[in-house]
Length: 145
Image (spheres, rainbow, N blue to C red):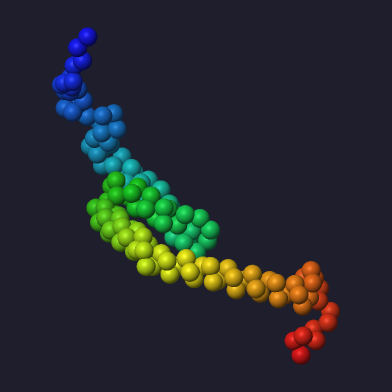
């Protein structure tokens, strides 16, 4: 039994024929009102996701991901968003390289361990002094005087 190691030549299929979304988008671009409506819709959705990402930078959530996804949505229609997305990708790549730097990684690990030890020492000191009383239930504040 012989094994054919040669790959079959690729079938020239859909390279010449546009996909359904491309055809749909071409139809919309031909009509000025539909095109403007489409662009307003893309802007609205992209800006909402982008603002959500910015909010998540200070609130809990994946803020960077929201910003990147919002810019990617906007970049489908707007050149300025494509440039901003390119700059954001470059900044993310630089941040990744910086985070994976062994010296900084070691420094951050040491600082995290020291912070954990200090937080644990503070909790232990509180429990030694006051026991299991919550701070607003302490009646004798002689320690602080």
